[in-house]
Image (cartoon, rainbow, N blue to C red; front, side, top):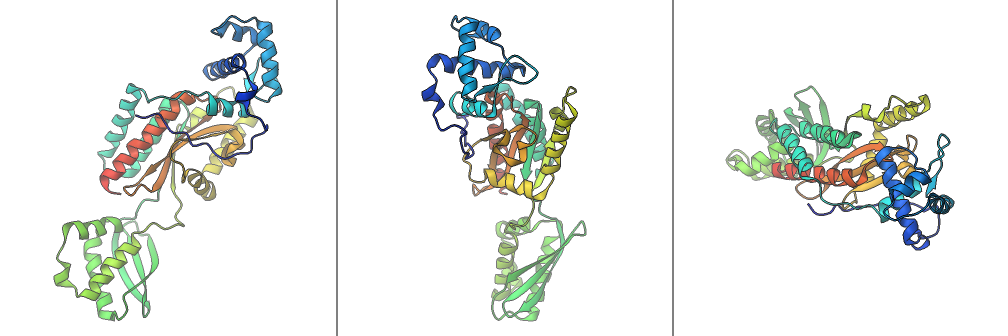
Length: 370
């Protein structure tokens, strides 16, 4: 797999300076090792500990001087419970933008992703595939796996056309689950009441047990002989009606699938931290938050990384989120896969895993012609 593309969210930098030009090579090396150590352990890093971990020989005093400069720039800070230093959200963003080395997803992880998603695909339900993708990402990241999916098409048992005007009709769609939906659409001029009824009966016969999208594909692919059954005007109603009704609607809320929520809750969490995580989950369940999150990745060419306050949905909990869109057969973004976790996520490992999972899901969807 090619190196994952990173699409960074637009933001206002807290400092009007280029950290790479401000920091010399030694300072960059110390900062990079501090962040890597913090990601490895989750603990603030002290100067003595850091001096021992560096590739070059530097005294603890020299390291302390560099750390003081890094702290003045806002790249690191001292948590109130420790004498060590940890990267700030600004520092983590700088690390991700300028220093993070991302390669291909590991062979074992690639096989694991493909194995679990392919196994779910055998059930022929796209919801099962997406749920498994979320579960796999949770397991690989030790965070919460997240999938935003388009709302599933309703399996229908009846359709009826009701005329509203000379060139306007309403389709009454009845699902197998009892759900009833009304959609208004245009009809060919000059269509009679009998032709409208004939088109309704024709579609109802072929729609049982299928979604609108599946019926449209069936009629096109199987070339069923509806020319003999229908006159040209009624055939136009069937073709144009299916084309219009099969189009996705902008007001449909995507489906949210989250696996591994417990991974975000540590036994040592203070009550206020637990409250923030619970509020994050509450926000995720809201319609507006889901739509906003999908919009955040709609124009992305690859992986997007949000750290802390860079995404308002995750700012309160102080979480990081790594997202990658997956696409339909026409290369339109239809959903998102990702990982939610603490800011000390192993970005180098998780970014390619998220990117590859989105690739596998896109491939499966394209294979099905969805």
